[in-house]
Image: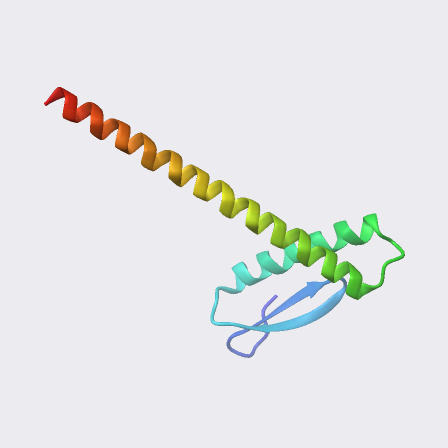
Length: 96
């Protein structure tokens, strides 16, 4: 659901509507907002007595952890790729 104003996308997070101003693709913005909403609800479900701020902070930490783990995996995959490329280069040198 997009707003009529250019660059605004209407999203719903924790049953609250927000208008996000961005040059980005509205479908992408909604996808990110849906992800945040799911994560907030997941954390809220495990800590039902927590206030909204605590749920938001715990959710931010959880999402940041996911980001750090993804970056670590990317680096490890990139290191593996470069190692294999060096090994292939050495094998080619031996053949020539």
